[in-house]
Amino acid sequence: MKSEDTPFVGGPLDGRVLPVLLGITGHPPKTYRVPVPAPDGGPPTVLVYRRVQAATGKRLGLHKGWTYEYDPADDGSGPRFALPWSARRHKRGGAGGDTPGGNADE
Image 1 (tube, rainbow, N blue to C red):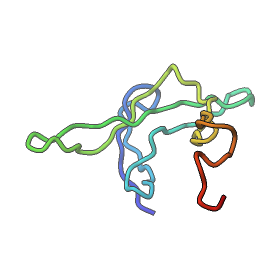
Image 2: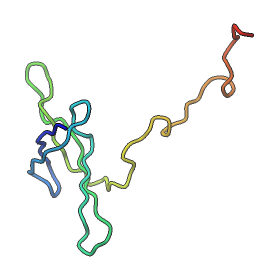
Image 3: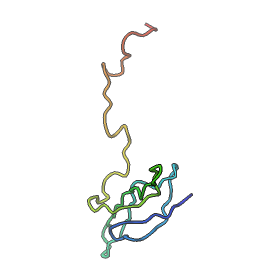
Image 4: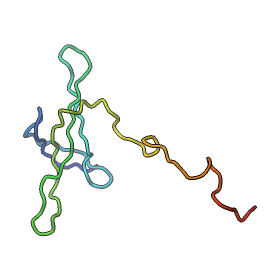
């Protein structure tokens, strides 16, 4: 798998550059979660970093890489991903799974 050296801004990892694995599209993940073990053996604290665009080019406006910024508001307890069919209910016109209008087989 490919990795990319990505700088971290803010929080405990401020100023560090870590290798982050790239996904299928060649981009690093949108969120980077770092579990920090508790000193007394309790549940670990999760630090959450969000991916942001590092800079843009002058001519075409293309991005020149990514950085991760610390997000202190997110405690890492939320879902890691949301499936499209679980986030909302699809409402169709008509009743249930009825075929709308007439059907050529009838």
